Each structure stands twice: as C-alpha cells, then as structure tokens.
Length: 115
Figure 1 (cartoon, helix red, strand yellow):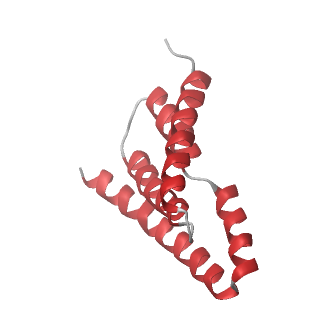
Figure 2: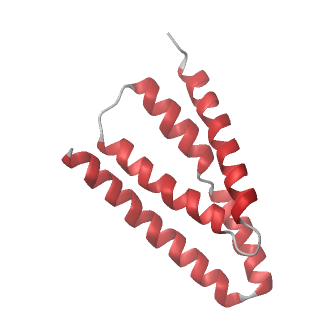
C-alpha cells in the first residue's frame, strides 16, 4: 500500500511541474498562467470534494497535485509585481482570481454532487 505522504509528494511534484510549464508559456506580460491554474485548480478541487474518493486518491490529487498546481504564494508575488507597475491591474487580477476561483470551486462541487 502506498504511504499517504508519498502520494502527496508525488502529486505535488507533478502539479508543480505542470504549473511551471503553463506559467512559462502564458505569463509573458500578465500572469495569465497563474490565473488559469488557480481557477482551474479551484474547479477541480471543488469537483474532488463533491465526489467520494479513496483517501489515497484525495491525497495524491487534492493535497499533492492541486496543492502544488494552485499557488497562493505565487499569486501574492505577482500581485506585488503588478502593483509596482499599475495599481489598477493588481485590483482586477486579485478580484478576478478570488471571485472566479470561488465560483469555479462551487461549480465543480455542484457538478460532482449531482453526478
């Protein structure tokens, strides 16, 4: 049987790599990659919570993969970077990330609960 900490670490390694490659492709002028992985990750986490899965899968996907894919620290770093450039864009970025992230999580949860 796989240890839960191995599941979390393995999922985290994969999630961090996916986030890195998405951000490398999309974060040229604006942090669209971070925005995308945070909103998509919120949706997937809501979906995962709405379904009943085995503990090992929840650990691998939820805590590991999605925990590393979505990132609060990068969001804050990019918010400070945007603030240095333009106060208006940082407000749009933070508001849209939080609002759409919550909406995506709720939507994922509701879809999974109805299936």
